[in-house]
Amino acid sequence: MPSLKPSSTRYGLLKRRPLQKKTYFRNRDYVYAYLVDWCLWTYLIFILYTLLYQSSFFLWRSLYIPVILGLFFSFIFWFLPRCSISKPLFKIDTFAYQSVPTRFTNTPYLWLSSALIVSTLGCGLKITELSLFELLSPYGINGAKKIFMSIFSPDFSIINMVLSAAIETIYISFMATVFAVPFAFIFSFFSSSNLMKGSVLRYITRIFVRLFLNTTRSIEPLVWAIIFSVWVGIGPFSGMLALMVHSIAALTKLYSDQIESINKGPLEMVDSTGAHSTQVIWFGVVPQIILPFLSCTIYRWDINLRMATIIGLVGGGGIGRMLIQYQGLAQWHKVGTIILVIAVIVSLMDYFSMLLRKRINV
Image (cartoon, rainbow, N blue to C red; front, side):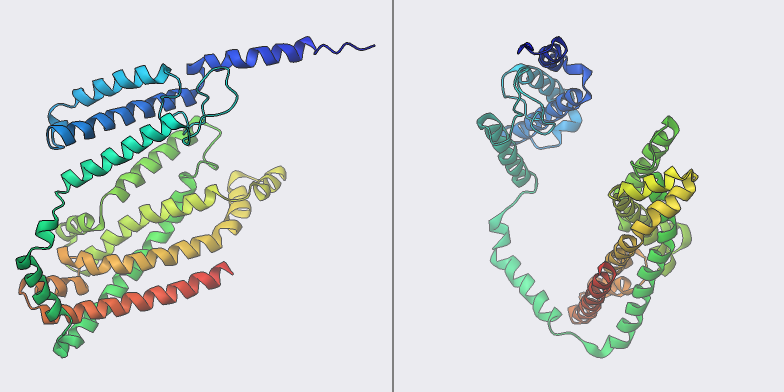
């Protein structure tokens, strides 16, 4: 008769599993979770100090205060039962022998998360200096009323110049999108995690490309327009270059997200035939991403059209240059004409881009 006692191998595995959970720093998730805890506690101490004592600019003068206190509290609460904020994010068990992962619905996490959100809102109210008294003051309301009354009674004597500048704005956004697509298409493959893996060189390349593009995307088109207006002079060329640089980084992000969500089946099929890595990408990846890429490109053109009306404020050409000119002269009737034309163009562009995206996704 066979023994009902479990085998030694299976029994050993069951005994070793809880013990392996005690070795926290062998798993990188524990390291990441502790670093997140440290950042969260540092941030919580920063906003509490801001609310109770000083403005937020104290951080630049005494950075070590929230960092050291955050390290102290994160170290203490990490080892207390159910008091780590980040463990639910990484699905880490609170106890070494607990098989059910922690959840945000548990009471300690609910209180800690609520305290973090409420203190963040309070800190934001103090930093932004929210004042209903200034918002509802009679003097401010009368000034805003005069401006709105002038804007909603546009002066159509300048409609020809406004339409000419609007056409220039449309072409600025169009050319910026067209020139950005080839660069973004190439960079997207080098910044995709599912394609750039398997070697240290690929990993370093992906990190470098993403870091460069994230830095580029973090700089607003207005700043790029200022840079290029000094570089190539004031006009539509500088506006187009500003939008192109920002669009390359933004489209690369959108494209790489689409590549990372592709089906791996065609890749494995093409790779099993002995194809080169370039052939695997061309025949296994490109057919799956053409339609999503077109949809993202049209969406980016829509965004560039909206941005092109703004970069003219800093010398980027287009209708924004007229807008800042008449606004500086306080000619609000003419400003109303420009705003009306911008609203019509953006609405039409939004409608037609929606139709195109629907046709592409069918």
